[in-house]
Length: 597
Image (cartoon, rainbow, N blue to C red; front, side, top):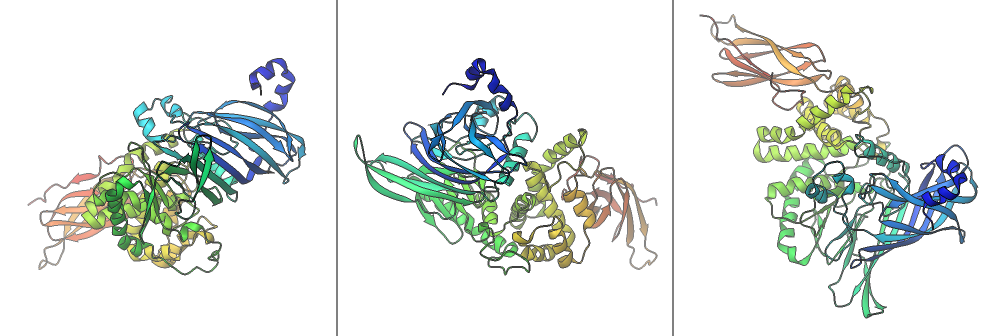
């Protein structure tokens, strides 16, 4: 088929309808794909059917289909009849190559709103490691390669879907990584449209019979390596390895497959697929996963009863009942990647503590499911901080929590410097990991400080993703368990984006008690918040005999007062121990002058 540019040169009349194409008019409601993989040639060949529904409000004659630019469309048909289509490259950073192979298909007749169309598709090509979209934005090649590691090869075959490699058809308007969160927002909108789409793919790899048995692994439910059978090719006897990839909905799962000579280690806490030469390493990972069990059982006990009004067990999201899984990435330089309860990672030597932190988010996803990403990611981050606290104390936990503070402060400063509304990037609608994990983790930590572990655990035990239809659902659960109305907190930190607080000590007034037998002091401290978000912040009073703290609620652009009794005059006041993220932290200490004799 001739290139679009050439066709338009000779047939300019074609340009007018294509300029008006609505790339997001159709939703693919069902994928039925067969994927043939040739590792030695880096090739995949795909045939199958797509069922598409016109979700626009007017009839549509044109359908847009996009796959990675390293793949090419070979045929598109309906009811056995080939369709007219025009193909060209389409620059967009939803794919690791930074470009897509786009086909604009002309239907025999218009599809009315809400009607469906079934297309037969054929496409294929190579998938090799490509980090073009990252390197052209200035990311060093070595760093880019550790993040965009998807490829098909004998040494390493793992392919993630949309957001990394568009190995199955999609349709999204062009977006660029240089345009803030545009790529992540566009992918999130597509995933939301595909929330109920059914995805079925059968991945098939044919290998010489002399090679070790292959395993075709995926992030679909279950941990089976699929099937193997004898086959014949031109060179003689071979083996065919195949596995199905079935997903009910694409809002959270990113269809992903990996091929290697995996063997399975199944433990009650986790299942791991690994290469035979890493048997010793994989046992370390299994032990680390088991070391997380006490924390998980304390915060997310298994087999909790359904809440009133929640979805029935048969309609609960599968993550509620699934087991965490690890699939080894055979490229030792690849960065780990988690999708739900599945972690793709190289197996490396590391301390048990570090492995616990690596595995914990996938284990949390296996036990807890929320349709709200800030809760899903924030809770995983919070439990990582709790793991550090259980092992090394609060100071170490706050140091770990602080890893996101500066990034969050920079992101908030950038967001509030734009002309957009302060509510544009709230935890309810953001797709930015700094907010979802960083700010979400801080929110859970601040809630735990304010209401205590027991109340927060009771609220989580009552939480059911299927019942979360209202942004205030979790707030109400927490109000019931803690007997505290935290509307002000959720309003500033979750429902709206007020930015971050900025505390400093205005004044300190130590006064000796009138009871001369005790010789204690009442210290009154006034705290001012120059930021735009309210918070309950700890105020630490340091004395020669130790320190005590009091918690003070300080609203935005207001002052708050804390009082506490200490045995000797205070020497220093410190507002905020790092548990509340601030715009800056250099003005949080106040040296108290010694009392006059």
